[in-house]
Image (tube, rainbow, N blue to C red; front, top):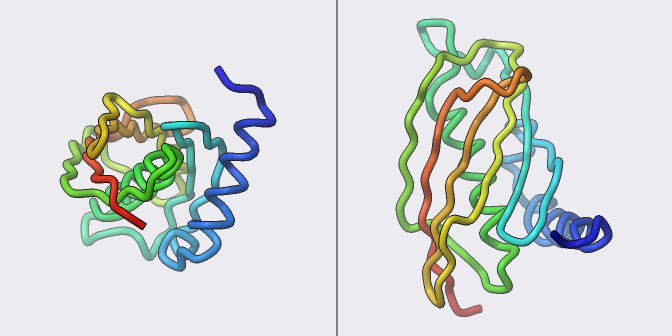
Length: 140
């Protein structure tokens, strides 16, 4: 594992190059918790306006958190990465006021593609959703 200073470098780079210009992640209230090579841990609190007609979080809220975690983790690998395929399995309903944590980890990294898994958990580390994403590395 890299040093804390090295992880702080990744966190600062992602914050400066991506998060500071990401109006949607900011609107969601996403906080950057930890960033390292091929890894991100971010969180957010579910607000009342994020609920659907059943008074649980709209599926797109959890998906968006996971997608942001994927973006932050995949762009630590030295190339610009964009998602080309994603899926999510919602395991438990999410309620207003819950704090969600998304943990994205690389599974495989190749020359042009990388695969990630993102677990969404609650305050008690109970799994709420699992997201899988594939990214493509593009020329800058």
